[in-house]
Image (cartoon, rainbow, N blue to C red; front, side):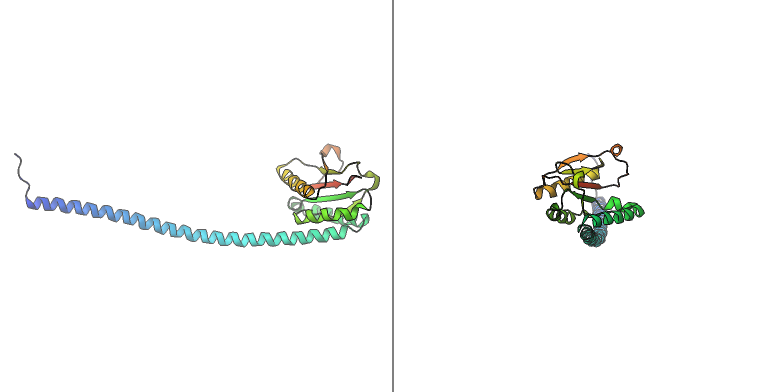
Length: 206
């Protein structure tokens, strides 16, 4: 038989076990406290980021409202007649040439009518496009240059242009305007088209 374990040895063993258990508990508590501290820090960071996001979102909405107001002014300036449309278009082209980055920000849809009686009919469509974030510099009467059927012309094949085309299609569909989509490649035109440039040519079917 082995030597019997003394009471003092049992006490020492029990003490060691208790200390080990206490140390383990302290380690767990410390880990939980550190995790809670980190979570609190992350929560504070999230609050700061949300505040920054809300501020940026407000600025974006403000800029969108300003842009829509500018688009309305451009349309009013260029919609009274073909001469005003040409002048407004030229002024806008000069602005875009001097500020190339604007062309990437502001999508433009140029209106070309075949007869003057189409001018009033085209205005609700222009208003809807402006409300959707597009600029409509005016309405130009091109007379006999207009196609036999209404055309929606675009000049690029990029992801951004595809999104713009989809939005324009939605506006046209919402007003029951049918337009044949026509892609004009750079090789087919003599002038360089700026990014996000679109044209609506209204035929007799409009």
